[in-house]
Image (tube, rainbow, N blue to C red; front, side, top):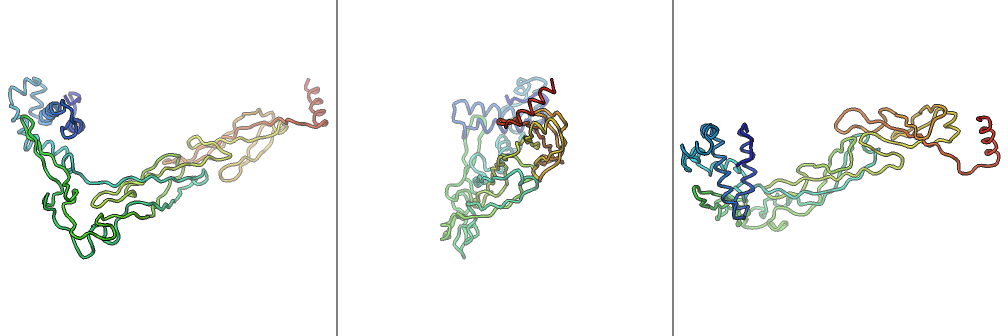
Length: 340
């Protein structure tokens, strides 16, 4: 019924019941089958979360349980029945309707170059978002006044609803409509924010981009929109690493095309190769063929979240001239004749 294995532990059983209860609770699932499914999984949880009842079930299946306990007995050992099970699963969340409010996330784009991410980079962004009202400190009350306990919910922030479902009663809670879950009402609203406790403003978010960072979204907790008496949302930083005109990136490794003439390829020698930090000297053997790869260890990008750096791979590209003067052609013909 719960979809767990025979040797499942208490934590796994509780976690699976949480998922199924959220799926089939009648306040959320309006299908005709939902109430029956919810009763079945609740009974399964009541049995399997009790050591003695679980042992009987392991030995004799459902018949072993029904032969020893009534429906009331099955739920009676749960510290107050199914209501306590439900409270244990959703406790602190105000049933299915309540809960701590959370501000919306904000997405901001940041564009950086490959050179920027050779080291940790500090970034400061001016973010337009909902911030606490400076006039009332986020209370929503006019200065010199205060809130009063909500008369509808008695300061609990929630109102309760009882539903009978066959063998048990289910008490669920929903956010109080009068105080919107705060448990208090404002007598004289703040003029600056009109009693909302928040206003639209600009805040500076400063954070570090780790060296070696790649294109993607990165979350900074608590830097999003503010809500009164709740949790601030997050700032989602959408990082874009700008394409480089000389280098192609593959993780922490870089690839670079080093063009040389056919004469250089034939004779070999030492040549300068560009890196993100300047130039390095490499040695090319005589008779080097086009597309030869020369590895330059540790000249790539830092490995994000790890030690060391990637490598730089220089691909040798031998350029063949498209136009030559008469003397150049004569020399090549002489070379060709000597080679034969």
